[in-house]
Image (tube, rainbow, N blue to C red; front, side, top):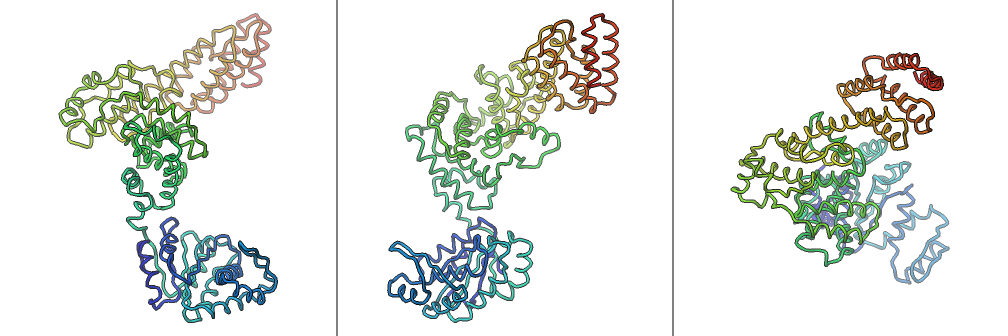
Length: 563
């Protein structure tokens, strides 16, 4: 077995006539370019016949397809064939052959082969045949057909994708049946650039090389999608801020994510367990995919950071096939109106040293109305470039975290900020993010506990308060043991967060009470002491304290149902 680069297929095919081998095979992974180079090498050659085994069920289908391929187009020959095989339905644009006896097919093929010399038969997609089609039959066909002088057969396969049974048969018969097997180990070095074209390749090659794609089909799909996008978007939209190069990168990264990574948001480098947990909390839904593509694949390497806005637009386009020109134009207006800070990559060493030397200088240089997301991104850009040079970053994590917590509101943990707490390239910014996560989590816990305490003292509750209990229960499950203990302690100090059902109540109030009791039962499984027992004793004492009979009845009902 000889290992070769995919492009060498052309070299082998071009000298096939003078090689001593009659039966050869090209074996390599899917998407490496086997079929592409074989077909390229046969473009200008006569008497080359290509058959794909995709979905084929038995050997007869090979004979039948080969027979059709061997039939000359001229009518004289066609009329002779009519006499040979009997009934045929045809038209001036094509024909369908109805063959009464499959047994005659072998003879018919042999007869056609006798009248043709120097034939090459290519049989592709061995791994895509039906499982009940025994590969031994293919080898038998090859042996039979090549007994005639001047006939050569080229098999093409990805043996890695054979079924277990086919793999076993292949290993048993391949060496006996084939003169030479060429193992295609890699695709040609220039193949990606040829597929994408010089302009697109220049823009996307860094993303390509960093992600080590193994399948050329990803490139082919990306190239087609880029052409579709450029065909649809108005030329007038493209300018210095919205460049073709950035559009290329976004399109390519989206296709890479959907096709090569199969839409899975996974860490692309090794990270510790704490960081892994943070990663999966940050990327816990499809809504986070644009963020993942931006930070992990594109790595914000665009001329204009506001181009992030196009990621979700183009992602939806690729996923659904639908393009909204209005949505695209709206995002284009935002990108064009954004006044961007000077990108650290474009700063001089002196400018970088000055800004990275003192956090107060960094604060002075930014727009005081800068959003949380843009602030974090700007700081990440600076930290990344200083870490990769000898300039260094003279900031302390705590001073950055303190400034940010004073500047921004961290009460809305789930929806406003947490989606931006994603792993970045810079070690410094990742430390900042981890501390911000802890701070945001702590603030959010305190805020929710305060709301639950206030609700426990309300007489009139609405659906809004019920939604808070659902949010509270869901968030509690994300807490660590220490945080859970703090919340439980607050519950015990505040009537277990139960708004006592005195007097006339509403259905909302009663539903709220049920939610609290369900929550007590649920969290009892995840803490050290028995909360159910503590809660039961507390509520029974409250029953003894009060004279309101309907209140006592309601509380006993809840205790009996849950505790």
